[in-house]
Image 1 (cartoon, rainbow, N blue to C red):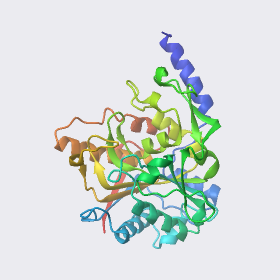
Image 2: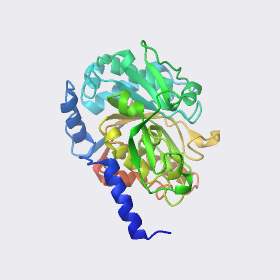
Image 3: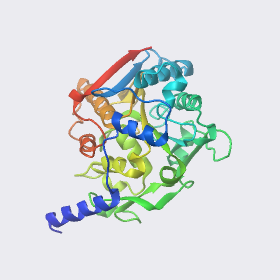
Image 4: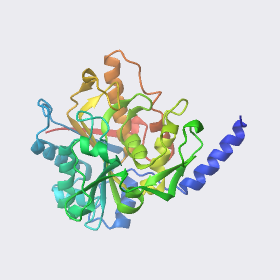
Length: 354
């Protein structure tokens, strides 16, 4: 066993060398900086609090699949509220330019019911195209290609149409860009040891990322929303972060704070048309899945995750299940890493019905 103080100093050293200097929080102000860098046509409106937009359509999930036209209307209304713009093209141009290569990070591990829905992704694609992004410069991606196939995302690596592929077996990992941490169970380290390599999709293929998770609990991390979906879908060697006492913290936050991801995050849209309060992330218990019938929008992934955590926790309490607040500590850690707002008093939830 090593001395705890030595462990902390080595850990901090590794974090500093792997993460580099992390700038200001991504939130609204962070996106203004990104717009200056990338030359987006318009600016996001100024607000005192981090805003989370929730757009609901009662009855959209009364059948097995949502009506794409209603999903499109929900997408438009969410983006209008987030950006203050009144047209689809103007709204999406606040965050994306025609020169961007945009990676849409989906969550396809929960089967047909608990994965990012193609209808939601298709609505995002239409928005990007309205902003002038070329169709072939849109990449739907995740870690494993077979998950994409099984949840309705046909693979395409060609030079026409929207591209879709995974990291493992296709894009591969970037050996030069990695997250290094000793906050793990060293017995579960894979061939890269204390390093987790970033996907080449993140480091080489895209200039911007849209994060599209699903609202669900997670048996280890408490919940899996924006932070968990993006962090553990973008790197390898992740099993080591799951056991006690870590429960995916601080890795979920620190991976998102790494410049490889942080500098490319533009937008987060949570697919909560259906959500899960127990048995996630790939629950086969149909009785723990409910029709939330909402999409959540924001540029502050910490604020969105805090709202999602409250919703899932409330549902669990209604079913006499244990709270997941204590387990989902990675969300509060993300605020400390400058990724956004965790304090509920500084988050404004805007609820819209369409």
